[in-house]
Length: 273
Image 1 (cartoon, rainbow, N blue to C red):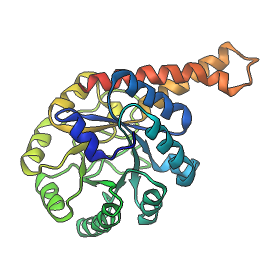
Image 2 (image 1 turned 90 degrees about the vertical axis):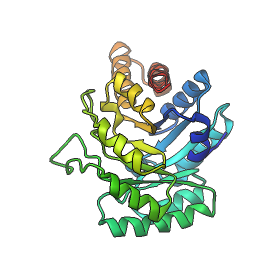
Image 3 (image 1 turned 30 degrees about the horizontal axis):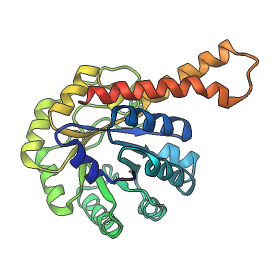
Image 4 (image 1 turned 135 degrees about the vertical axis):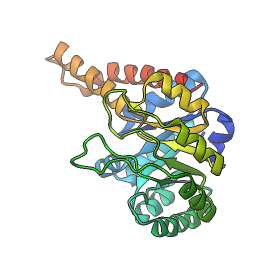
C-alpha cells in the first residue's frame, strides 16, 4: 500500500525505517519483496542521479504501482531535491513523500523554501523531509566536507517549518564503499533533546552493522541506504556476465543480482529492529 513517511513512522514506532535509493524496476521490486518477506514498511527513494536517468513522470508511476500492490506500507520518496519545480512535479506525479535539500543555502533561505514546500505538500497529504547541516560525499574534490548539525539550529529550523522529518549530519558520508563512518552519538542525543521531529541519517552505507542497530535504538527514525545495494547488484551482475559470456538477454542476467539485492535489503532491515 502507498503510504507517506508519517504513516510509516507510526507503524515503526521506536525503530528506524529503512529508506533505499532505487534506480529502476529491478532494485525497487527486490526491495519491496524483501520488505514483504519481513512484513516491514519501507521507503523507495529517487535521488537526483536516478531522476536524471529516468524522468520523474516515468519512474514515479512505476514505484507508485509497486507500492500500491505491496502487502506492506511503502513510501515513494523524492530524495535530495534542490529545485522547487522538481518537488512540484513529484507531488503532481503522486509521490507520497519529498525531501527539500536546502543544506547548501543560507539558513533563512532554507527555512523560506522549506516552508514553500510544506505549503505545496500539505495540500496533497505528502510528507516533507528537510536537512540541517550538510552530509558530505566520499569524493572530497567533487563535494564539500560535512557540516555537522547544531542542536539549536535544528530546533529553530523545526520551529519555523514544522517538517515531518529532519535529516542531520552526525558523521556519515554519502557514497562510502567501506563501513568506516564515525558516528557522533553525543550530537544525536543533544539534537533529540531539542527537537521532537523524526531524525534521518543519510549516507548510511558507510555505517558498520553494529552502528546501524545502535542508530535505530538511539532514536534515528529513518536510515538511508543506496551504495551498499548498488555494490551488490553491480558485483553480482559482473560475475554473471563473466560466467555466462554468451548470454545477451539482460533479463536472465538480472535474475541473480535481483535475488542478491533482495537478500541484502533484508539483512539491512533486520539490523534496524
